[in-house]
Length: 427
Image (cartoon, rainbow, N blue to C red; front, side):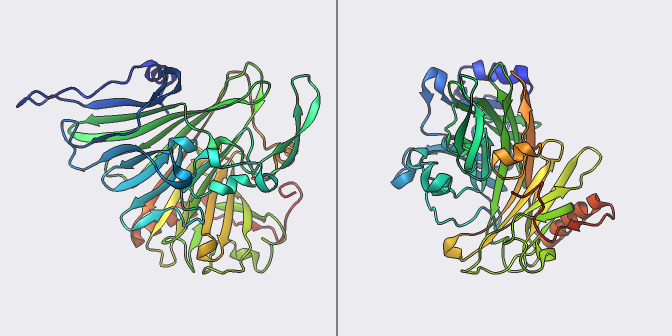
């Protein structure tokens, strides 16, 4: 994450332009900072791009960052930023909470085939639809953030009102942040030693109201030229002077070609708990294995407690049926102590997908999570940081190396697999 002083300076800076190159004279440009959206200054740049050809010295890899606006259907007016680091490409959607729509690395795609084919504009999504399930009307991303005030199942919670009375509120599925547009968006490109050092997309998203939630997400999405990894650095800030609860869950979704009959999650699981009787059906020890697309399949969800290294870092691997492709999700159990695995291997037309979901909580209704001590609280003006790294593995050796790293985290310990839901974890 950027130091706070530097971030403040960037937020205050005017958008610089690339220097002009006089004919026959090369102007050295080893860093670029471009503001694309700034609500405070009424700025929105609809179309913009920068590439390896624009900065000198030039990188050997042909990287590119491009901003445009989607047109047609329910995606009309959605801002999109496409990043290609020369090896890994991915798409950020500022209009949708700085979520990541998809990524590609060689022949490996990170994402899935949702029944929702467009990057739906938030104006077409009613979160209260179908008893609080309206979040699903636009669900198609590779990585959704769920929060900030709440995530998990819809339903009633009780909170203090502006009068101090405790009143009922209806929470919707996975909160609001995925459908809130960023108020500030920037691109920073840094070079060094003749090679591109990194590409960074910065965003600020506010979830605020009078007499209610006053939370801000400051995010940095970062990759290096030629890397097969990208990292999300997030900071959730309490803008109020008084304490507030918050929750954040990273709903990372994967379909083919990684997901398939025989694909498997490799996780350093100390404990695995089926969320409900459906998840407990059959052989629960098979929780980590996936089958072929099955039209009659009903989702199964498992709650995991993970082992980590001495610094609290852990890693979860999803590997393809042939173990020749995969993706790792790395994070700190000190920041994101709970992991959910969502298995939804229904028909392809209905959405054949699995979710690997590190979070501050399990995705139960906030009222249940609060009773069991899994709703964090920020003091007035305080912040909470979380970092998640995604790494693509494009061959059998890389997958095997990742699996070995994950298995070492257990250090010979066994995994407790609960035969059914347990009261403190499952409503």
